[in-house]
Picture 1: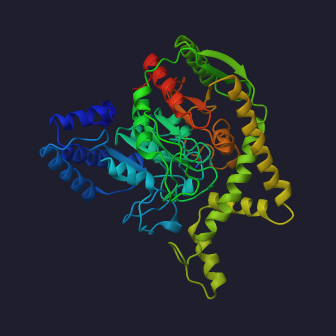
Picture 2: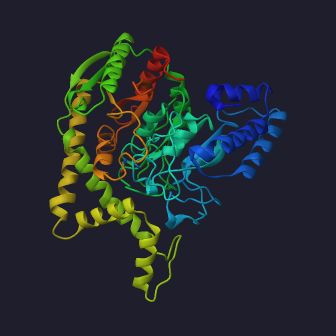
Length: 480
Ligand code: GLN
C-alpha cells in the first residue's frame, strides 16, 4: 500500500473496521522504504523491529475491542534532530553519528502516546543548517518529484518521506523556514506553530529563540490532528507557553467569509519566478472566492530579514554548539593536549557550513562587535515584529509565496552560500516574529515542480490559519 492515496483518518478507519491489520501496513512501509529510499535518501536510519512489535501490540488491542485514537497505527517519520530514547540522533553530523540519547523528546512522546508508529529518523542538513539537505554529512535527499532536484531543507528527509508516500506524516523543525520551504518544494503541507506552542524538550538546539517543531502531512486536516497531539504546555521547556490546545480539526469547516487577508507588497520581489507569482495571484483569487477580503499591507523592514536572521541564528548556534567538545557528547578525536583534542574533534566532526556559522556567530558576539552586529540585529528583530503587529491590526492573515522559486537542482547553490541564504527570504520573518505559518501546495510551475503558498497568522491564531488553509485546499484540490 502506498500511503499517498490514503489519509491517516481513512487508515485508522480501516483498522477500526478490521479491513487491514496494522502489521500489514507497517510491513508494507518497510518494503516501500527498501524499494524507494536507496535512491531518495529520505531516511538516515529506521527501526523495523520496534515498529513491527508496536504494530503487533496494537493489532492485539484492536482484536480486544480497544477504541482507537485518531493516530493509532499511523506510520510516522521523525527528523533526526529529535531524540528518541535508545536510537541514534545524528543531526546529520559526524560529531553525533554514534550518539544515543537516554530520553525521548516531548513532541515524539506525545505522538507515540497517541499510538503513532515511528518507522525511522529522517535526513537533514547538518544541525538543521541549510535549505537543501545537501549539508547532511551522510548523503543528500532527493526531491520525489524529480531526483535531480533538492527537496528543500533543512527538514528535506521528512518532507520527501511524506511526498513519496513512505509515511503518512512526519515531524520537522523550523528555525527560518525548514518546514515550510521543503513542504513547498515537495508539494505537501507543512506548519510552523507559534513559538512556544510545541515543547522543544529533546529537540537538538540550533537557534533556541527561533526553533519550533511542526508537522508535514498531505492534507491540512492531518496537520491539525498532529498539532492537537503535540502542542501544549510542557514543564520541561521553559519557553513553552500555557496557552491551551484548541479543537482545530473540529473547526476547519467554519466559514472563512469576511476574514481579512493581507498581501504584503514587499513579498513580490524581482528575481521571483513568474510561475510562482502567477500561482499566488490565482491563490489570492481563490481566497476571495471563499469570501475573504483581500487588501495590500506593508511590512517595511522585510528587506533586513535575511541579514538579521543570519546574525541571530549564527550567534545562538555558536553558543549552542559549544557543547560538542569531545567530552560530553558524541565523537572524540584524541590529541596530545586537551586543547588539541577539542580542536581535532570539532575540526573532523563538523562540516563546512556548520563551521562557517560557528565562525560568523562567534564573531558577531565578540567584544567590540557585539553592539555593531548582534545588538543591532536584535533591534531590527523588534522592528520586524512591529511590522507584523501593525499589519495584524488591519488584517487577520497574511498570504505570500513560500519561496521565490520551485525546487532547484542538486549542486546548483552549494558553492554559493549567500544565494542559498537568499532563498529563505519569505520564510525567515515568521520565526523572527514568533508567528505561526503554513505552506501548502497551490499548483505547479512550468518545470512541473510544486509551488507553495504561505499563510501567516497572528500569535496563537493557528485555528484561523488551518481553517483558511483547509478551505483553500478543498476549493483548489491541489493535493495529488
Ligand atoms: N535555511 C535556514 C538556515 O539555513 C533555515 C534553517 C532552519 O529552519 N532550520 O538557517
